[in-house]
Image (cartoon, rainbow, N blue to C red; front, side, top):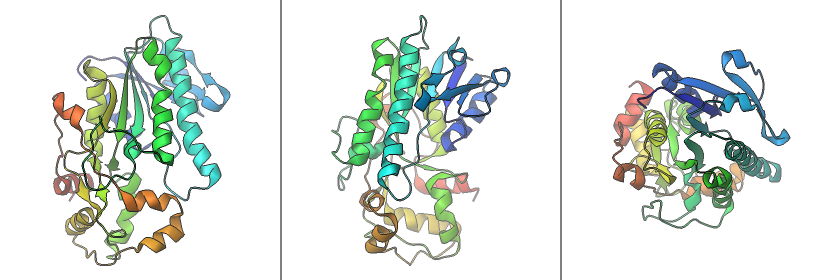
Length: 301
Protein backbone atom coordinates (compact mmCIF):
# COMPACT_ATOMS: atom_id res chain seq x y z
CA UNK A 1 0.00 0.00 0.00
CA UNK A 2 1.25 3.46 -0.85
CA UNK A 3 -0.89 5.92 1.14
CA UNK A 4 -0.60 5.69 4.93
CA UNK A 5 -3.89 4.87 6.66
CA UNK A 6 -5.37 3.44 9.82
CA UNK A 7 -5.83 -0.32 9.48
CA UNK A 8 -7.92 -2.23 12.03
CA UNK A 9 -6.88 -5.85 12.49
CA UNK A 10 -8.25 -8.94 14.21
CA UNK A 11 -6.11 -12.04 14.65
CA UNK A 12 -3.00 -9.88 14.96
CA UNK A 13 -1.11 -12.51 16.99
CA UNK A 14 -1.63 -15.31 14.46
CA UNK A 15 0.70 -16.46 11.70
CA UNK A 16 -0.65 -14.08 9.05
CA UNK A 17 -1.60 -11.32 11.47
CA UNK A 18 1.82 -10.99 13.05
CA UNK A 19 3.50 -10.81 9.64
CA UNK A 20 0.94 -8.26 8.46
CA UNK A 21 1.39 -6.06 11.56
CA UNK A 22 5.15 -5.95 10.94
CA UNK A 23 4.70 -5.08 7.26
CA UNK A 24 2.11 -2.37 7.95
CA UNK A 25 4.36 -0.83 10.58
CA UNK A 26 7.33 -0.76 8.23
CA UNK A 27 5.19 1.03 5.65
CA UNK A 28 4.12 3.71 8.10
CA UNK A 29 0.50 2.68 8.64
CA UNK A 30 -1.35 3.11 11.94
CA UNK A 31 -2.42 -0.35 13.12
CA UNK A 32 -5.31 -0.74 15.59
CA UNK A 33 -5.52 -4.28 16.97
CA UNK A 34 -8.75 -5.82 18.24
CA UNK A 35 -7.72 -8.12 21.11
CA UNK A 36 -9.46 -10.42 23.55
CA UNK A 37 -7.16 -9.53 26.45
CA UNK A 38 -4.65 -6.84 27.28
CA UNK A 39 -6.59 -3.99 25.70
CA UNK A 40 -4.82 -0.63 25.92
CA UNK A 41 -6.16 2.00 23.52
CA UNK A 42 -3.13 4.22 24.15
CA UNK A 43 -1.01 1.42 22.66
CA UNK A 44 -3.40 0.70 19.79
CA UNK A 45 -5.02 -2.39 21.37
CA UNK A 46 -8.82 -2.33 21.63
CA UNK A 47 -11.15 -4.81 23.31
CA UNK A 48 -13.30 -7.21 21.40
CA UNK A 49 -15.17 -10.36 22.33
CA UNK A 50 -17.47 -11.69 19.60
CA UNK A 51 -19.19 -14.15 21.93
CA UNK A 52 -20.21 -11.24 24.15
CA UNK A 53 -21.00 -8.93 21.20
CA UNK A 54 -18.21 -6.54 22.25
CA UNK A 55 -16.14 -4.45 19.84
CA UNK A 56 -14.68 -1.16 21.07
CA UNK A 57 -15.91 1.38 18.48
CA UNK A 58 -12.90 3.61 19.12
CA UNK A 59 -10.80 1.14 17.12
CA UNK A 60 -12.77 1.86 13.96
CA UNK A 61 -12.70 5.65 14.19
CA UNK A 62 -10.90 7.08 11.17
CA UNK A 63 -10.01 3.67 9.78
CA UNK A 64 -9.41 3.28 6.06
CA UNK A 65 -9.46 -0.53 6.09
CA UNK A 66 -10.34 -3.48 8.30
CA UNK A 67 -8.58 -6.85 8.02
CA UNK A 68 -10.40 -9.66 9.83
CA UNK A 69 -8.25 -12.76 10.34
CA UNK A 70 -9.42 -14.23 13.66
CA UNK A 71 -10.79 -17.77 13.85
CA UNK A 72 -10.31 -21.17 15.49
CA UNK A 73 -7.63 -23.32 13.86
CA UNK A 74 -8.99 -26.17 11.72
CA UNK A 75 -6.02 -28.43 12.52
CA UNK A 76 -6.50 -31.35 14.88
CA UNK A 77 -9.19 -33.94 15.57
CA UNK A 78 -12.66 -32.68 14.71
CA UNK A 79 -14.80 -33.41 17.73
CA UNK A 80 -18.29 -31.96 17.79
CA UNK A 81 -17.09 -29.15 20.08
CA UNK A 82 -14.10 -28.44 17.84
CA UNK A 83 -16.33 -28.17 14.76
CA UNK A 84 -18.68 -25.87 16.63
CA UNK A 85 -15.76 -23.59 17.60
CA UNK A 86 -14.48 -23.58 14.00
CA UNK A 87 -17.84 -22.40 12.71
CA UNK A 88 -18.88 -20.03 15.48
CA UNK A 89 -15.51 -18.30 15.80
CA UNK A 90 -15.68 -17.34 12.13
CA UNK A 91 -19.34 -16.52 11.64
CA UNK A 92 -19.95 -14.71 14.94
CA UNK A 93 -16.79 -12.61 14.73
CA UNK A 94 -17.30 -11.73 11.08
CA UNK A 95 -20.91 -10.76 11.60
CA UNK A 96 -19.95 -8.51 14.53
CA UNK A 97 -17.32 -6.72 12.47
CA UNK A 98 -19.63 -6.36 9.47
CA UNK A 99 -22.54 -5.04 11.54
CA UNK A 100 -20.32 -2.52 13.30
CA UNK A 101 -19.08 -1.23 9.96
CA UNK A 102 -22.61 -1.03 8.61
CA UNK A 103 -23.67 1.08 11.59
CA UNK A 104 -20.99 3.72 11.02
CA UNK A 105 -21.75 7.07 9.41
CA UNK A 106 -18.43 6.90 7.54
CA UNK A 107 -17.25 3.28 7.46
CA UNK A 108 -13.83 2.22 6.16
CA UNK A 109 -13.63 1.75 2.43
CA UNK A 110 -12.73 -1.93 2.52
CA UNK A 111 -13.11 -5.04 4.65
CA UNK A 112 -10.62 -7.80 3.87
CA UNK A 113 -11.96 -10.93 5.53
CA UNK A 114 -10.03 -14.17 5.77
CA UNK A 115 -11.54 -17.17 4.05
CA UNK A 116 -10.24 -20.52 2.85
CA UNK A 117 -9.86 -22.76 -0.18
CA UNK A 118 -11.82 -25.31 1.83
CA UNK A 119 -14.75 -23.77 -0.06
CA UNK A 120 -13.89 -25.99 -3.06
CA UNK A 121 -13.87 -29.30 -1.18
CA UNK A 122 -12.31 -32.45 -2.64
CA UNK A 123 -12.37 -31.99 -6.39
CA UNK A 124 -9.74 -34.21 -7.99
CA UNK A 125 -6.98 -33.08 -10.32
CA UNK A 126 -8.66 -30.19 -12.15
CA UNK A 127 -7.37 -26.76 -11.04
CA UNK A 128 -10.13 -24.57 -9.64
CA UNK A 129 -10.77 -20.83 -9.82
CA UNK A 130 -13.05 -18.37 -8.02
CA UNK A 131 -15.92 -18.99 -10.43
CA UNK A 132 -16.13 -22.68 -9.57
CA UNK A 133 -18.98 -23.72 -7.24
CA UNK A 134 -18.45 -24.69 -3.64
CA UNK A 135 -18.55 -28.20 -2.28
CA UNK A 136 -21.04 -29.62 0.24
CA UNK A 137 -18.91 -30.77 3.15
CA UNK A 138 -18.18 -29.33 6.58
CA UNK A 139 -15.39 -26.92 5.64
CA UNK A 140 -17.14 -25.75 2.50
CA UNK A 141 -20.28 -25.00 4.49
CA UNK A 142 -18.21 -23.11 7.07
CA UNK A 143 -16.66 -20.96 4.35
CA UNK A 144 -20.05 -20.20 2.79
CA UNK A 145 -21.46 -19.00 6.11
CA UNK A 146 -18.21 -17.16 6.92
CA UNK A 147 -18.30 -15.19 3.68
CA UNK A 148 -22.05 -14.58 3.94
CA UNK A 149 -21.54 -13.02 7.38
CA UNK A 150 -19.84 -10.07 5.62
CA UNK A 151 -23.11 -9.10 3.97
CA UNK A 152 -24.09 -6.24 6.33
CA UNK A 153 -20.87 -4.41 5.45
CA UNK A 154 -21.35 -5.08 1.75
CA UNK A 155 -24.92 -3.77 1.86
CA UNK A 156 -23.63 -0.61 3.55
CA UNK A 157 -21.34 0.07 0.60
CA UNK A 158 -18.11 -1.30 2.02
CA UNK A 159 -15.97 -3.11 -0.55
CA UNK A 160 -15.58 -6.66 0.80
CA UNK A 161 -12.73 -8.98 -0.22
CA UNK A 162 -12.87 -12.62 0.91
CA UNK A 163 -9.28 -13.86 0.77
CA UNK A 164 -9.42 -17.64 0.33
CA UNK A 165 -6.03 -18.65 1.71
CA UNK A 166 -4.21 -21.80 0.67
CA UNK A 167 -1.58 -23.51 2.83
CA UNK A 168 0.63 -20.67 4.06
CA UNK A 169 4.35 -21.43 4.09
CA UNK A 170 6.28 -19.85 6.95
CA UNK A 171 8.91 -21.14 9.34
CA UNK A 172 7.18 -19.16 12.11
CA UNK A 173 4.07 -21.34 12.28
CA UNK A 174 1.35 -23.15 10.41
CA UNK A 175 1.64 -26.40 8.47
CA UNK A 176 5.28 -26.01 7.44
CA UNK A 177 6.56 -25.47 10.98
CA UNK A 178 4.62 -28.53 12.12
CA UNK A 179 6.19 -30.63 9.33
CA UNK A 180 9.79 -29.58 9.84
CA UNK A 181 10.78 -31.81 12.80
CA UNK A 182 9.88 -35.02 10.95
CA UNK A 183 11.52 -33.83 7.73
CA UNK A 184 14.72 -32.83 9.52
CA UNK A 185 14.87 -36.26 11.15
CA UNK A 186 14.46 -37.92 7.75
CA UNK A 187 11.30 -39.74 8.78
CA UNK A 188 8.81 -37.87 6.60
CA UNK A 189 7.13 -38.81 3.36
CA UNK A 190 4.05 -38.33 1.25
CA UNK A 191 0.58 -38.54 2.80
CA UNK A 192 -1.56 -41.37 1.50
CA UNK A 193 -1.27 -41.69 -2.28
CA UNK A 194 0.60 -38.39 -2.59
CA UNK A 195 -1.49 -37.47 -5.65
CA UNK A 196 -3.71 -34.99 -3.80
CA UNK A 197 -3.33 -31.32 -4.62
CA UNK A 198 -1.27 -29.03 -2.40
CA UNK A 199 -2.24 -25.38 -2.90
CA UNK A 200 0.48 -23.43 -1.13
CA UNK A 201 1.52 -19.77 -0.86
CA UNK A 202 4.52 -18.06 0.74
CA UNK A 203 3.78 -15.82 3.73
CA UNK A 204 5.38 -12.86 1.91
CA UNK A 205 2.87 -13.17 -0.91
CA UNK A 206 -0.02 -13.50 1.54
CA UNK A 207 0.91 -10.20 3.18
CA UNK A 208 1.42 -8.55 -0.22
CA UNK A 209 -1.94 -9.85 -1.46
CA UNK A 210 -3.76 -8.41 1.56
CA UNK A 211 -2.13 -5.03 0.95
CA UNK A 212 -3.04 -5.28 -2.72
CA UNK A 213 -6.66 -6.11 -1.83
CA UNK A 214 -6.85 -3.06 0.43
CA UNK A 215 -5.50 -0.74 -2.23
CA UNK A 216 -7.01 -2.12 -5.46
CA UNK A 217 -10.52 -0.84 -6.00
CA UNK A 218 -11.23 -3.45 -8.70
CA UNK A 219 -10.77 -6.33 -6.25
CA UNK A 220 -13.95 -7.52 -4.51
CA UNK A 221 -15.60 -10.77 -3.49
CA UNK A 222 -13.81 -14.12 -3.29
CA UNK A 223 -10.10 -14.00 -4.14
CA UNK A 224 -7.89 -17.09 -4.07
CA UNK A 225 -4.62 -16.38 -2.29
CA UNK A 226 -2.56 -19.32 -3.53
CA UNK A 227 0.61 -19.52 -5.57
CA UNK A 228 -0.01 -19.86 -9.32
CA UNK A 229 1.73 -23.26 -9.45
CA UNK A 230 0.06 -25.75 -7.10
CA UNK A 231 1.73 -29.14 -6.70
CA UNK A 232 0.83 -32.61 -5.49
CA UNK A 233 1.54 -33.69 -1.95
CA UNK A 234 4.28 -35.99 -3.27
CA UNK A 235 5.90 -33.13 -5.21
CA UNK A 236 5.80 -30.91 -2.14
CA UNK A 237 7.32 -33.67 0.00
CA UNK A 238 10.18 -34.32 -2.42
CA UNK A 239 10.91 -30.62 -2.86
CA UNK A 240 11.01 -29.92 0.86
CA UNK A 241 13.27 -32.93 1.35
CA UNK A 242 15.63 -31.62 -1.32
CA UNK A 243 15.73 -28.17 0.25
CA UNK A 244 16.55 -29.69 3.65
CA UNK A 245 18.87 -32.36 2.16
CA UNK A 246 16.89 -35.09 3.90
CA UNK A 247 15.30 -38.32 2.61
CA UNK A 248 11.52 -38.53 2.18
CA UNK A 249 10.89 -42.24 1.82
CA UNK A 250 8.49 -43.04 4.66
CA UNK A 251 4.91 -42.37 3.53
CA UNK A 252 2.14 -41.91 6.08
CA UNK A 253 -0.53 -44.53 5.31
CA UNK A 254 -4.06 -43.26 4.88
CA UNK A 255 -5.44 -45.54 7.58
CA UNK A 256 -2.92 -44.22 10.13
CA UNK A 257 -3.97 -40.65 9.41
CA UNK A 258 -7.63 -41.57 9.80
CA UNK A 259 -6.88 -43.14 13.18
CA UNK A 260 -4.89 -40.11 14.32
CA UNK A 261 -7.02 -37.28 12.94
CA UNK A 262 -10.49 -38.69 12.42
CA UNK A 263 -12.67 -36.62 10.07
CA UNK A 264 -9.95 -33.98 9.55
CA UNK A 265 -7.85 -36.67 7.82
CA UNK A 266 -10.25 -36.46 4.86
CA UNK A 267 -9.07 -32.89 4.23
CA UNK A 268 -5.41 -33.86 4.61
CA UNK A 269 -5.73 -36.82 2.24
CA UNK A 270 -7.99 -35.22 -0.37
CA UNK A 271 -6.34 -31.92 -1.25
CA UNK A 272 -7.23 -29.53 -4.04
CA UNK A 273 -5.47 -27.48 -6.71
CA UNK A 274 -6.55 -23.84 -6.65
CA UNK A 275 -5.41 -21.01 -8.93
CA UNK A 276 -5.28 -17.26 -8.03
CA UNK A 277 -7.07 -16.17 -11.18
CA UNK A 278 -8.54 -12.89 -9.91
CA UNK A 279 -5.26 -11.72 -8.41
CA UNK A 280 -3.34 -12.46 -11.58
CA UNK A 281 -5.96 -11.02 -13.93
CA UNK A 282 -5.92 -7.77 -11.93
CA UNK A 283 -2.15 -7.43 -12.23
CA UNK A 284 -0.86 -8.80 -8.92
CA UNK A 285 2.63 -10.31 -9.21
CA UNK A 286 3.79 -13.08 -6.91
CA UNK A 287 7.31 -12.81 -5.51
CA UNK A 288 7.45 -16.59 -5.06
CA UNK A 289 5.36 -18.34 -7.74
CA UNK A 290 7.45 -21.56 -7.71
CA UNK A 291 7.70 -23.94 -4.77
CA UNK A 292 11.44 -24.55 -4.39
CA UNK A 293 12.47 -20.86 -4.35
CA UNK A 294 9.60 -20.17 -1.92
CA UNK A 295 10.75 -22.90 0.47
CA UNK A 296 14.36 -21.76 0.27
CA UNK A 297 13.27 -18.21 1.07
CA UNK A 298 11.01 -18.95 4.03
CA UNK A 299 13.52 -21.43 5.48
CA UNK A 300 16.58 -19.28 4.84
CA UNK A 301 18.17 -22.02 2.72
